[in-house]
Length: 217
Image (tube, rainbow, N blue to C red; front, side, top):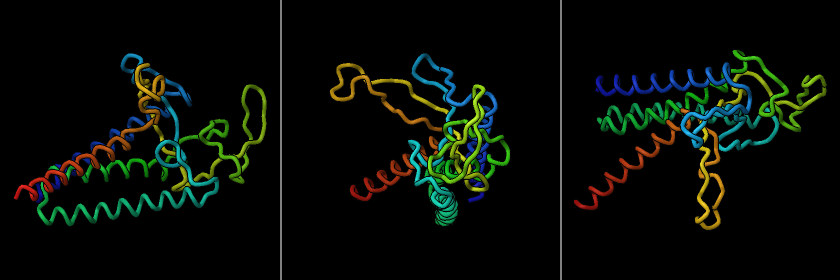
């Protein structure tokens, strides 16, 4: 049991550190909406921040929806930790425990952004991802020699944006019906998102394997 716990702990800590290192690097080295291609012309680092969940989904312009989302993340993280503890005691396989660890690390990585980034990094009201029409919070944006008021998001603990940076800049070929010329995967994501997706995928694979064995039996 201790060996399994140590391995999962190493995986989780490594993912959290790498996730935060990447996000801090992007925030301190890129301009908002800046794109730098890493592999050919199909994979790039693109600096953007997300006020809500995946694909830029938001839940309104006020403070309460964002706060509710962060609280939901905290509750999910707690339940994942409880579930992991139970599975560890039930001597679940290392494969399954690592998969849970991936999900836990991803959820925690994005929560860290919302919790602390507003206190660590300067806030620029001119950045589009900080602006929310109808938020009720006004700041002065000074850009290109002009100053004008803008509505911005609420700031503070659990209210910060999540930093995203990975982008697949690939499109469907012309022979694909209905999708020709459209992006294969338009979302911009981060390592925490990839960690959650990987963990869920591994869990599904594991559950299918168990179901298949029971069916054969």
